[in-house]
Length: 274
Image (cartoon, rainbow, N blue to C red):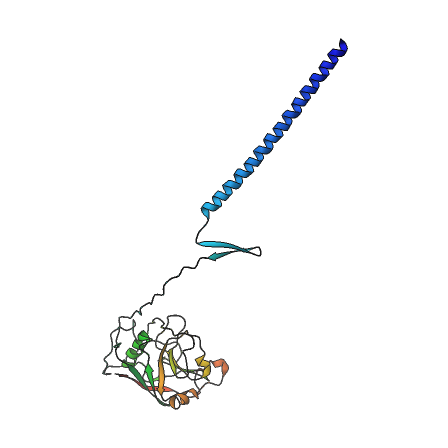
């Protein structure tokens, strides 16, 4: 009798132990399932957030472990920016005016776009003629014509001559810092358009044109980057007057061409219109 009781008690203990073991196993399974579900939920949330906040205007490319943004290129049609003229009055076209060298603003449109213009330079080294490129740089030609008709350049010195490069003029102070009191916008050429005999505006940066200009006298000048408005070409006197001016270069490389080895004065500059 006692033996049967002990056997029953033993079987009951085994059953309870098995139930506890199964319960613990089921709890582990439930906990593992809950953990996996949480991880999956987190991943889903992250993916949703990334998808919502991504910028469609940029692609992200991974290259050898480096993450770089590749902007989407949007084609924009080229828009020509019209030259903005100033408010200063135009001088008389016949030259019947007093010399004037100070202005508060750039000039109004003073030239006739339908006409052609040439400039005649009478210098201490001879005379030369320049065809002004009003079809390519109308604003710059307008400025040069207006200043010339105000007799702005008459009696000024060319203050810089660099060998095989340029002769620079147009500064009434002959210091390289003078100007008419205003500046105006660039009308730049494309690369490779400069050549010996080209007339271009000197500047101190983008859109800082005033009155200073240079004549290209050598191959080094012809290779300048297109950062200077091209507005004229020497047609007469390149091998005489311009060559004589170019010969007066400053031999000191540290001087940057200032002053020239000899005096160059623009005695008179006149405009012909046809």
